[in-house]
Length: 132
Image (cartoon, rainbow, N blue to C red; front, top):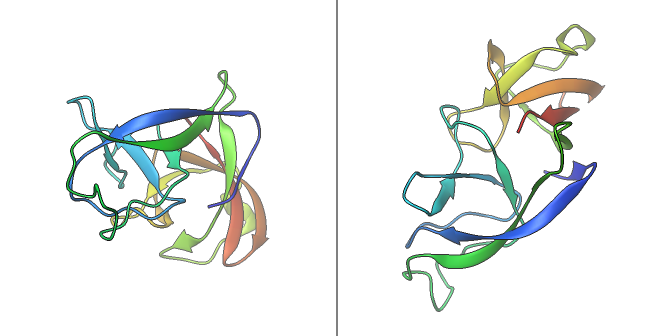
């Protein structure tokens, strides 16, 4: 997901043996590591800037350090996204939603707390503010 706005890069320790593609959101798991974010994940969300691949030489290493981004200040930051569950409409602007169960798309069929729709580009693309 492309992102816009004021962000800061930082390093996050990832759990071992979990492949996560670049551009997916990650979240702290409560033990000092980060995992892929899904619909039930609590804020804040961080956008992973590096792929964690099964072919990485240290794939099975706990707390592998990867780069991620998050918004600065209280304004959050914006991402371009693909909706899940329904086509985007201008009536959805201002509504809040969460990631879908796979964590790859924003589910626009159920109210949530992770994202706020800010702009509709088309029925299949939009801009959302990350409510981190």
